[in-house]
Length: 129
Image 1 (cartoon, rainbow, N blue to C red):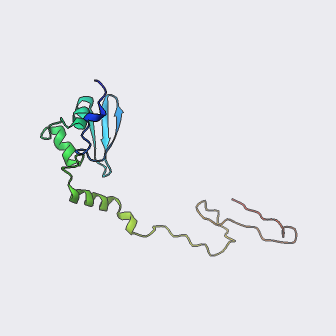
Image 2: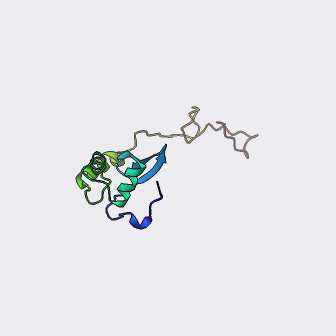
Image 3: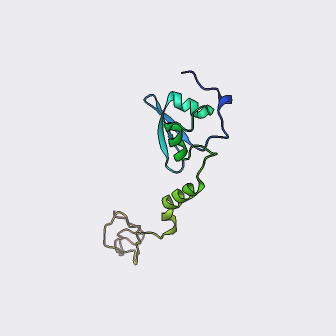
């Protein structure tokens, strides 16, 4: 199939999506997590606005919000709310470091075990992991 002419793409009809070619088919994804594989012919028809919106491929594209004019905003809002709900909850792991002389050797802890200073090590700093 010939490369598509950029002047023929119907930008105002298409919603935001990304695509990549895999084994002769195009994977289209959007911000909501919608995805579909299209043949090269269907992909070109989709870009140029020649794809029948009542065909099975057209209906699937509409259902997953790939068309800007047929965008279901309540579905988009619900999807974003579900996917980003973790932003409104606090951290699930709290680490309290009460001393710099921790005798545990945890990898995740910020503090590390420091040796006691004596007259021989007064000017040196040791870090043991």
